[in-house]
Image (cartoon, rainbow, N blue to C red; front, side):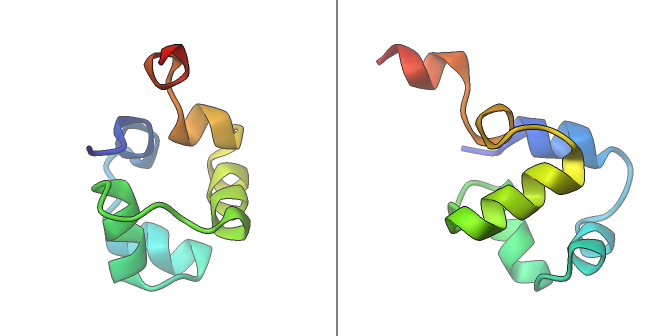
Length: 67
């Protein structure tokens, strides 16, 4: 499932721009945003800091916690 929060926060910047700013491979960022991969804890925290949100806000929704 695509990470809509990351897509929204990325805005009109490209996946490549964001991955270069964060300092991770483009393919890694793309797989995380498209939901094909979940980041390690350190990378999840790095992404959350980059977007100025919590890890929970970036990767989990209320629906995820309800089950």
